[in-house]
Length: 167
Image (tube, rainbow, N blue to C red; front, side, top):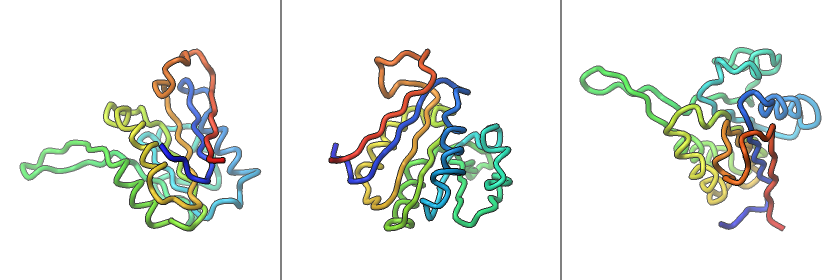
């Protein structure tokens, strides 16, 4: 897999260990003016305590800032007979945002990827998609509840951060 000339950060650890708070704190301080757009893809954002008390986020259904996009990658689909089912659209959404914001400094936060079985299966595909797409000036943060990406790590680790970049 060919890495691009941009840093990729993977944060993962136990539920509630502070992964999301860590990144949001950085965005409020050191990185507050670094990104033109921030895209948050999180299926559980309306229940996630880390987002609720952030003044700059506001209501997750209608964010305060124009450059902040919050999307649930799980969408409800209505069949012809009227029944509803949920469908995961993470990869399609990422492709759309990568194309839309190509050339602009954009941070993608993919949070709580293990919220559903569908997303758990797709999280590695999502990361490889990021490396393959033309995402010049785009950054991708990916937060996982479990550590299946790196099997040797035990779930007892509080938080692990990997920074991947091309030399």
